[in-house]
Amino acid sequence: MSVPTTIRIQQSDFDTAAEIAALSAGRTDIGAVVTFCGVCRGGETAALTLEHYPDMAEAEIARHADIAIARWPLTGLTIIHRVGRILPGENIVLVVTASAHRQAAFHAAEFLMDYLKANAPFWKHEDTAGGKQWVETHARDDEALTRWDNS
Amino acid sequence: MKVKYFAWVRERIGKTEETIEPPAAVQTVGDLIAWLTQRGDEYAHAFDKPKVIRAAIDHAHVKAEASIAGAREIAFFPPMTGG
Image (cartoon, rainbow over all chains, first blue to last red; front, side, top):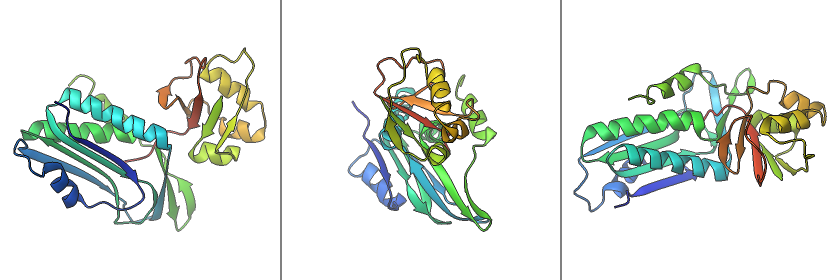
């Protein structure tokens, strides 16, 4: 049976509670729902503008959703990534994983975020008091991927 | 074939996309980067650190040694920073 999967790339904000409700409505096979929500951090950052490669972003997210579904016994999956201008405190990305038991949901959510950060074609452009610049990648994002190779 | 550029690669080249017809000797993604680099200062600037540049053929990630034969759309962009 196919796993109910929702993937959206959108400018508008999302409502995490509404997404969980939509994923679980009318179902009794879900025992665990894990959510990860990435939020725009303030401090130096006055705003982020997210650029993306539309066709490829959808393809890459779908590809990673399929990998997660093949690897863990998920019963539902929602991935939403925002693009455009995002202010500190606003949502950027949402991953919701559902499963009969918590471990699969936890692991799949973390796996999806690690892979999306490194492989999904989105780029953050940052406004700061000192000017505008493209956000650079962190070595820790690539290191985060290696733990999934043998586990 | 169509070529697309994103983020600072797009800014440096000054184009979001273009249609190109590289010569037959240009066979791989790495060859294409080298060929684009000699088209002008803006390309040389965009590709001045070719190892940093990521590429995709028809919406799938590829390495520099990948063949471009049959490609409809090739994209060049910096390392990704979504999530």
